[in-house]
Amino acid sequence: MSKDPSGDKSAKDTHYATLRRAHRDQKRERGEIPTPPDDRRAKGGKAAWQAPPLAPDQVQLYGIHTVKAALANPERKIVSLSATLNALVRLEIKNTESLPFPVEIVSPQDLDKILGPDAIHQGVMLETKPLPVRRLSALKDSPLILVLDQVTDPHNVGAVLRSAVAFDAGAVITTMRHSPTESGVMAKSASGAMELIPYIQITNLADALEELHGLGFHSIGLDSDGPAPLESTFVGERVALVLGAEGKGLRQKTRDTVSALARLDMPGAIKSLNVSNAAAIALYAARAHLKR
Image (tube, rainbow, N blue to C red; front, side):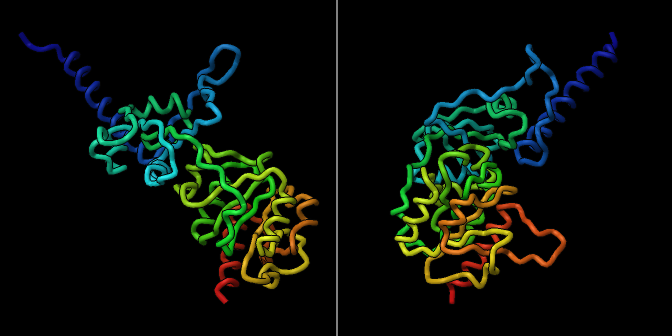
């Protein structure tokens, strides 16, 4: 009896569909393609996916570079690791049983349900406790720090952290209110930098600036209408660069408290920059001054 050709075709199609799905999942894990959007709607007109609530002492980190840096940070208190087999290979983890925390093998779809379809998690999620709280007194040996005045976007703050580490700044200081707390989004944007630099959140920025002045820092507020170019404003051997949110800039109290106001001279048609780009340029200029 001959085989049913329609049955053969169906089996072959299923086999190739499985291969295509596996190939697509691997590309998503590498961050080469995003998770396709889910336009389905749940009852009440809300989106099908909603972020699960997190406890105050719970942080979910994701992405290969972010998780690898967290695993290498002795100050991280790790609760658990969820990863695909491919992600474990990329993390260079060969024996999960030797790790001092539980490891769960998952699929990319499992992580989508927890982190959402927009998260480029690359097949790995690390649940941890927040990093230890840091104080300004810990900056005694640092000649260069960054201060953010109510920069609210975690993507921007993450990019600032990355630039701060690249230029060997001692810390990034921001306010507790109107600033992002430690999160997976910020850590992913920082690409591992969150583990390498103190992220200090203070109650009152003006009081913190005065404390920095007492520690010997010369604080410079970046302002598009600053009276002098940044490179001519540096004084002394310790510099605190202060940047405000895009659009609003520095608050008036901050402008009144910094040691000096300065501008980034830009000869082109655009006269303002994303805060993370402005931070990178200012850090470069500060490093050039400190090397003299």
